[in-house]
Length: 350
Ligand SMILES: Cc1cc2nc3c(=O)[nH]c(=O)nc-3n(C[C@H](O)[C@H](O)[C@H](O)COP(=O)(O)O)c2cc1C
Image (cartoon, rainbow, N blue to C red; front, side, top):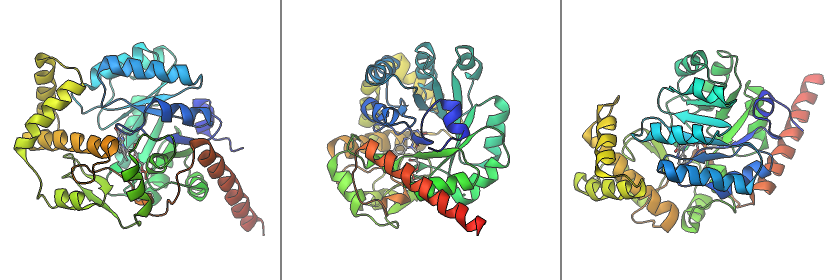
């Protein structure tokens, strides 16, 4: 048993979190992590507010444990989704890529807000704003990050803020958990490792590609969806990163597909597009990349289409070699972390 500020603040058994991952961190996977003693996070960026509510209710049918939702705030429909989560009184709300306006509302019903950051000065700001905990994402991570690796960023941020810090990016086993605790973190968040489990909804074609990949087989580029992010190296991912496959024309049907998925009317759709274009760093090319990237991501994850789809993945895809059930994985990580900490402690005692 390892008790940390993360297990205390979130009322969970183990300091292990399922990262919010678009299309992947779905109710079944969230509930599996919660029921195994970890903290499950539902990604809601790809849902309409009604679907966000449905998914939250589905989780509540599968577990009575606390869970979290994750929403990147730069998406034009973030406000409505966050509002739906607040009305559902989700215990923990995790945001990324933006500034939270809802901290007091969440605190008012006894909930907690968790900020995701990849730059140290953003961590200090999030703590000042009133966040209850932080997820700190290193460069090794799948999807969006910045330049500093977990080894540099984690101890830097833990010495800057007083709230619990959850280290993300590059974690997949008990040695990593022990290392994160040694760096001052209160626990770890894992994305790629949970993609490679029995309960993950990712198509087997991409699970098998990840299992075969080495630690060198990811690409970091802003061509995937308009923001710097890390994806599994495939022939299509290489083409996208080189700029060979970018098409403004393809963005139109893809944007219309997203409108359908989000169940938006034309007013909502155009309002969303306007909000995103006028936001920080938003422009037409970035929006086109996001539309193309979103649909290509879905093709990989749900259809297993290796020719038309790409998938975000972290460098840990290299060492991961199996597809265990979630509970087996979490129990294994905890046993290995305890053994590692005992071994490390013995070094200091001798
Ligand atoms: C397919 C995929 C989708 C992701 N979508 C989101 C998202 O919607 N919101 C978010 O904050 N992070 C997202 N992430 C990043 C993860 O939350 C997390 O930071 C990352 O997976 C941690 O690195 P690791 O894969 O090395 O464990 C995504 C990651 C992947 C692999």
